[in-house]
Image (cartoon, rainbow, N blue to C red; front, side, top):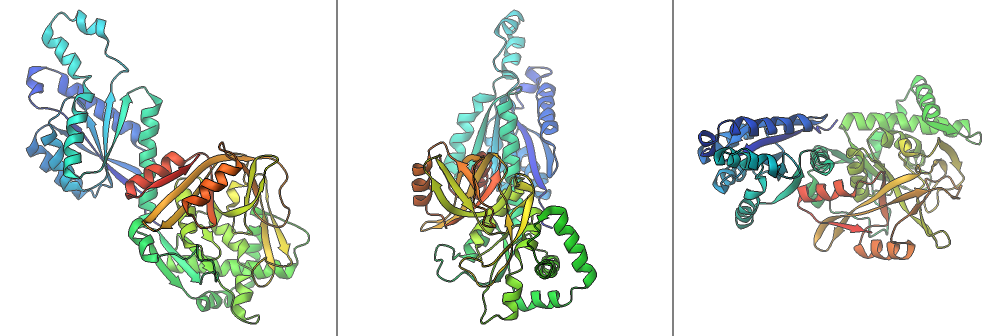
Length: 474
């Protein structure tokens, strides 16, 4: 599937004039940089160490080296005072997002220790090992005047905040890389009349880098027609592994859904899809209607395997679901169901597909006598998102372009609708009335992606890396 490995360039910057003046300072600062690299190495993140850059000539050589590694982001550790002329040529050549690391060795200088050294040269060397902040205004000034986008992480070595911020930036970079290399399938057409759902595919590809693969229902039918009885049995076993199949499910409906699920797997495999949006109606009980009314179980399995699928051809929302998946937050298809003013909660849900790994307890596979607002009948998902922290995300297309809309809340226990949907109860700090008004006025479509955990800070970092805005409702 898509390549999500981020190559993060790491350099230290300083001033070569200091090294002969203060013995041991260079080695000490290089040691700090190596510790940063060790702290940040993780799955899907490869740290490319560019060494210590302390003069303009070296900056150009290091830029060439890091460029050969095709880095996705540049971490600039300001080890001590550094001239801006050392940093600018390197950043100009690499043209990648920049994080300035203003990280001190300790929360404050040990004044008593420094002043007790008795030698002003030693004392100055000790200060220079702690003066990371000195260059931040200078570098920021030059970057601003040069039109270079950057972020600053300020703190000290043993501070949890620093490493949380750095890891979140790298996770956001992984999500960006995943979106750039994602192949999104579009099967069928929009649900007619949902003007909010209609999307600009070129804009989606332009901002996220996503490849859009337009798929044909006849191809899916061909794969479905070729499904064997053994494949159906294997899929039925998979259904029972991930779902509680209620007794009301007719065997014929289970087999119909299993056959379609096998065909969906084949469609995803052939086109190397990492996500998909779909919808179809057709005319007068056609063969395609038989397929599209049996997709929810199979699409739920795909979604739970990090290949999110959104119904009603909600392209923007499957992008939001994919972001959630790349941030390891799940990402389930949802829309507003009702407001409970008595309990101050918002009900959200959908008839599927769902993200079965996000469920509170086991997911139920249940029959529906009718798909509300859609043709036919078939199987659906009864599920509640597990209780605890959640995040809502919408990818929005407004009059000024694309932006992200996010809100953090809690999935809370209480009565839900037993109508064969993925409905849950959510509480937001701002309250029901403010939430629905502010969320709606931001301009999303009526669908959103739900993820587990509070990940708004990561989403805002992703927006920064993409150079788009992020609106938070809170």
